[in-house]
Length: 326
Image (cartoon, rainbow, N blue to C red; front, side):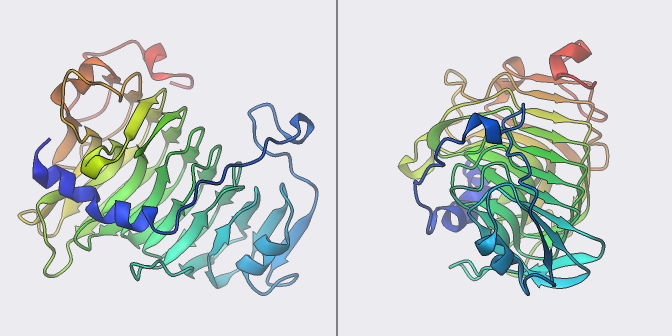
């Protein structure tokens, strides 16, 4: 692993580790779960505004499985510690939220107890739009729009996420960042069965004035972080990145360039493979000059990378190897 690539995530770990706890969700009654492990709606619906003035108030007063409908206008996001559905009704903009200690605005930060949460039909203009502070599983993010994020959707340590039909336009760096969708681990977990599909990432990577540089932004990235004595991951496997479009250009590529899709193990050791058995196919990377970046280089031998438009590795694998729906 070359140092410039490692630099790309220096900010992220500062952002994500601060204030994180190791709480775990208590097992749910099987009668409260759908067939795919998500919470069944409880039948309680709340309106913002209406029943509550803010999304945070609605979350604080909701029960697992409740539905929160958010109207037109600008709203702060929230710290989410329950399994709820938060859905916009048209023109719902999350333009602020809980302030991170690093000084960046968060949209929704998913905490312990928020497994099974759905975020849908929301527009974000925050710095860190959706980010989990715990190992939260079975989250759905769909039909949302993100504009000029430092980091749009970040899933550290979570499994079973569905990230689909979202639009991400423009990204920003602040001596780090510039990430559309991230799936990663730093705590020796097993990160499995996440689906990133039918998302469109486009526009310009805006490099901040005086940015420290020496790294790349990424449209979509799978990341195992063993730096600075961190535990990295036991395994990142069974994840699917399919039918996405990434067309990004940097406004200052000599300082920070951008890659469409990246898989990185920071140890850069071809004999130690923990990112394996993932499917990356039917994506359109043609609008990004640097399209696929793998560290170590032999990750293409351990993952099914095939049938992407643009640069490709995998030699036309059978569609069934890329998962259902292809």
